[in-house]
Length: 495
Ligand code: BES
Ligand code: MN
Ligand code: ZN
Image (cartoon, rainbow, N blue to C red; front, side):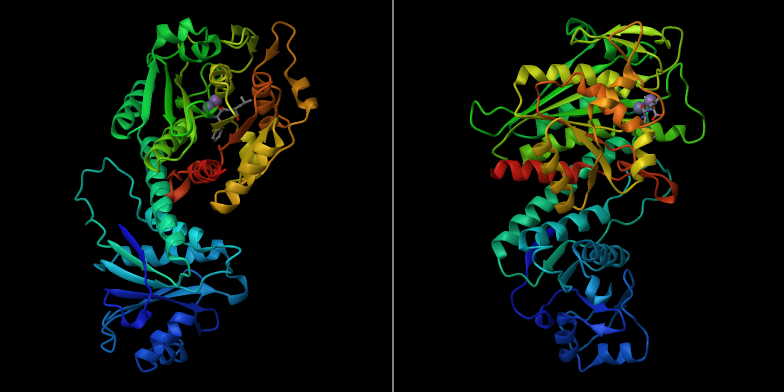
C-alpha cells in the first residue's frame, strides 16, 4: 500500500473515493463541508433527510457523485465532536478501511477531521493512517480449503490535512513497518501448534534474518542449551517430544560499542500446563503462549527494516510444555543458569522458568535495558482485563518509557507494584525459592520471581496474557505489544 499527503483541495482530487467525516447530530466535518460545496449541497441534503447521523463507526458510501472527479464519497461517523481523540480517530479510520475493503475502490483521499495536535501530531497522524490501514486489512493465513476471498483492491491512500509533509511521510513509513512487524507476530501466533514448534520458530527467525540486512540469528539446540546450564528451561522442555530452541537475534545499528536493548520473549509454543494439567475449556488458546517470542522476533525485523541507529538483541526461549513420562513433576528441583535452585511446585508456571534462564543469558551483552515480554499469568488478565498489558520491573525510568510508548502507540500498559514483600510468597523449604507464590497477586509474584534473576540489570517485564490475543468470534493474535515496543525502540533510537 502507498501513502502520501494531499495538498490541493480534497474535492478536486482524481482518486476513486473521498473519505470525509460527519460528527454526531449530523454535522459535516471541515473537509466534508468543502466536498459538500463542490457537489451542490448533496451531503447536507442527505443528512437533513436523516440518512446518516455521524455515529462513531457508521459509514455510508455515496456513488455517482457526478460533480466530483472522484465520483464516490465515503461518509464516516466521528461520534461527538468534543470527544474526538487519538483513539476515536483511529477507530473511525479503521471502520472506513473495513468498508473500503468490501469494494473495488483502489485509491482514496482521506480528509477526516483530526484530534488536537497534542494528541496526534503530523508524525503520529502519518503513523496512525498507515498502521490502522495495515492492521484492519490483516487476514489470518488460514488453512480453509474453500475459495479464497478476492484480494483487497485498496492500494493508494492520500491523507490530510497535514502541515509538515515530511513528518507525516516519516509516520507513513514507520506505521507501515509497525503493521508489517505486527503481522509477523500475528502470523506466527495464529499458526496451529503442531506447525509452530520451537524448531519452526527457530527456522523462521533464521529466515527473517536472511531477509533483513543487518540482522543475524544464532540458534542453540538442546546440547548447546545444556552447555549453558539452563536447567529451568530444560525442566520445562523435558516432557515434550519437541526439542527446545534458544534463539539469539542481533541487530547492530548503533555505534560499535553501544550497549544493547535486550528483548526477551516467552516462546511456549503450546502450554498444556504439564503434569499440573490445565482444564480443557479454552486450552487451545495456549497456542498463543509464544506471543512474547513472536513479538521479539517481529521487533528485531522492524529495527533492521527501519535501520534504527540502535543496538538490539532479541532472546527467545522456545519450548513446548507437555505432560508425559519424562515430564517435570511438582516438587522437582531444577538448577537455573544463574546457579539458583527452584522448587517447581506447579508445572503450569513454566513461563518464568524459561525466562529466568533467558534473562540470565542477557547479562553477557552488558545491556542498557532488558525488557521481557510474556503471556505470563492468568492473574494479570484478572487484574487488568484485555485493555492494558501489565508492566513491572526494577527501573522506574525504563517502566516510564514503556508506559509512555504504550500511550503514543495506542497499545497501553499499566504498572503493578513490584515491591519486595511479594517475593516472600516464593519461599521454599527445599530450594532457593518456589516457582509459584499462591493465587493472590499472581501477576506480581511471577514478576517477583523474574526479579530474582535481574538484579543489577535495568529490567522491565510486560505481562501480555490479556492483550496479545483475543478470544470469541474474532479469535486470533492482536499483534500486541509490537506497536508499544516499536515506539519504545524508535524513541530510543532518537536519543
Ligand atoms: N500461559 C499461562 C498464562 C496465561 C493464562 C496466558 C491465560 C494467557 C491466558 C501461564 O503459563 C500459566 O499457566 N500461568 C499460571 C500460573 C500459576 C500456575 C501460578 C496461571 O496463570 O494460572
Ligand atoms: Mn502455564
Ligand atoms: Zn504459559
